Length: 171
Image 1 (cartoon, rainbow, N blue to C red):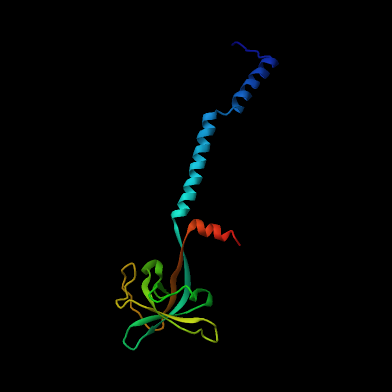
Image 2: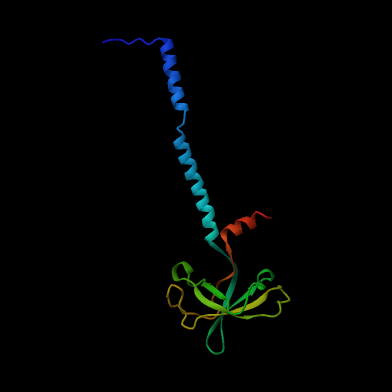
């Protein structure tokens, strides 16, 4: 066996060469990485321009049976949201008896908005129609009963995601 003897100076020279090679980053890799990073950031920003982000008014509801045998969803809407509601506006109703994850939402429309707030709680009574056939958006039939409770979601404003992010940082 031959023994190779490396002097201290040779070892320092080789170590210096290795350090120089490792510390030098090829320009092409840096440019490529920068281009990819900028492209990803611009893609995310441009996507936020196109994605709509709805703002909901979410209220507890109580099902009531009308004299003609139909059902209405009655809810109390607060001062903040009442100005954003109008007759005919779409309502998505989730009943506690039929979890929306399994059954889906009933689709209704606002039929009545009270002209005056309830003096005891300052909220407005809003009524929503309930489909006569009581089929959810997932096409599941429900057996409705007066007194059932749930939640109504009403889209009160559609806003681009980028606008929502910018507006959130204003305050």
